[in-house]
Image (spheres, rainbow, N blue to C red):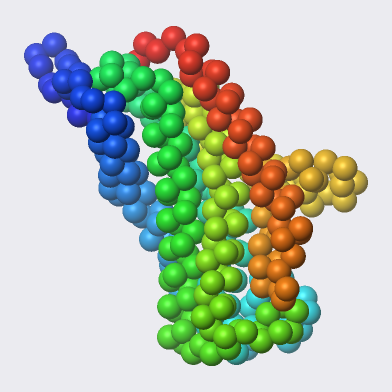
Length: 294
């Protein structure tokens, strides 16, 4: 059912009693998180995301490492020397498809799912309000994006340490730092990638306001993310690349250099901020004037 309780009657669902705005928003947000993380399909998706770092670690343990680390953008050649890089490799692999698909599923279901179930109108009469509903829905997407990114990194780190051990981390620039600093840099990588996924979530929230079919919204969001990566791979479109949603996602590798080039990270953060601002505004404009009948 919806994130806000409704009381069944003989004539169908009836809105629950109104509550104060502050406590109502907090309650709505908690319910939204329970809805996101409590669904079995989402739990299954998170389990699949967590399984990939384990598969990577086991595969590297039972096979020979890459012969030429210079052609290894996925950090696989460094895994056997330090399990820390299982987490980095898993993030590098999954940011290409699996993490965007997971966020697309949550974003696509955010508004379209309520409309499809016929609960959207009742949410708006609790009262929740359209602005508050969009804010809570997007906040739920943001939390999910952060959680799944940290989940992949944490499972990868634990699997890597268990199979390969830890120790000082050799960065891409050749500098060696302590394991504690390496963990801080890994958190920075997670934060950077989560920001990019939040931008995708804003786009997804807008798409979700356009339809009452959550599966269709999820497919559309996924296709947009994949199309962005395909266009980014076409050298003849280099003029377009800086404006693509996914263009700067792989720049997280800058956090594994010494010193960190924050100038190199700035375009990705600004691009994500622009996407978030544009598509949250578009979602608000679209949903604010939408005739809600379901």
